[in-house]
Image (cartoon, rainbow over the protein chains, first blue to last red):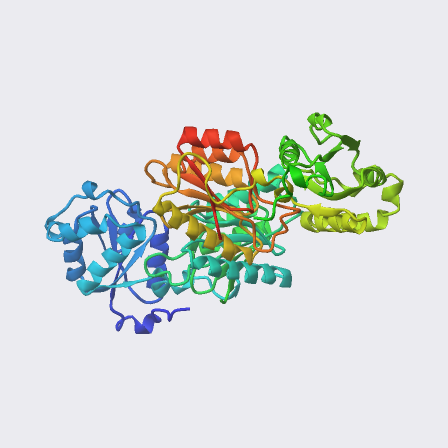
Length: 289
Length: 289
């Protein structure tokens, strides 16, 4: 696990922090956990995307493409670290409302928008870093939201579950060479499902359907969801995450539990995840790779 | 590719051949191709499973569990080679109608039925071989039904397609270590879907859904279905196969084509596959690993 950002005592020394907030409640969870760790984050809301609850913090609203306004706000607050948190729907370059700060960088931005999602993010991160703003991951500023090692809910994996977790972790490691697979479901040494482009929720729904249709004949709770980042994945820009939806999907698929690479997977809605896992008799556990 | 069973000239020398016919038309295709290759197969129909069209050949009907009747028929015809072809739904041991030949082997059979599907097949194959009947694969007796190297339909893969095929083949090879993945869809170096327990048709339907929902934004025909056996898979007992359903699924997913490990994947309904691939503008091509 990365070093946490420091306790309240370290707050004065920590560089000023901003959070660029994507959709949903998760950016607010990260902000709350950063505050708990002693830092007062400055929140950047994206008009039409971010939750209005960000206004409980020092904040600014920008439209997609208002790059000049964004950089001015970061400079005004002497922000030295920025986390990009939550789902952000990728705009078309032509939909951006370019302000003067963006127009100055228009050629570069247009180039970036020709890249894939990951290439776009890497390019945007480079622009921030050139302006003196270091990009940090949610896991670096909100340590409580990161999967710890060991069990998180009431149940713990059995030795058989541990064997499935280790098998799944090796499978995901092998898939890393192909830039695929953050997730798989393994039951008693058998691979039931592997995630590619469909996403974790769809993969869990598939396991459920296979059990309901009788294609998979398994008795009682069976199988473990294993989730880990790809080898070499830049956790600052793109970190695997689970949340209450993942737990609900795993419960509907009648899995035995959820195993997460410790220190490398975010848990949104941690308390609710634990509560719902306990209700369904699932374990949630971090594993060390 | 394995050596074909020999042309008509070799027929007299070839050992007597039987085909244990699972459901569907594929066993009949294999029988026809074996006959074309100069061998006259003896067909074994399973009551309630096999197509009644097997009666166009020398044949016998047996019920599940009539092991004695089956072995007597094989001995009476001096059958030395047996192919098990087509889908066979796995019965429960308690549903078998055991005749005297089965009762003599009941303890052993009951053991086998405690195994997984593959273990059961391997065990049954061993029983046949002990009786002097060698188990052969459909690919050994029906060479025309096996994917050849190179294009089979009008279109051929482009160099970009070839790169996706090689990438997908390496991916499947890596998955072999986990006894998973006979199939994947790759588009321009990106893995869109990986088959585990759901089967090829379900995986293709998923790619289609992801395109329709906009989760995957791809223009025109995109992506290649790559199919190959697992490393070490016993092709005599369990050989990957495609058919008109596969072509239809690939066409609905708007793929560019289907790539099959040459010599190691069966093609059911070959003429229809080619016709429908041509109609949809897909390639079907064998690749050498």
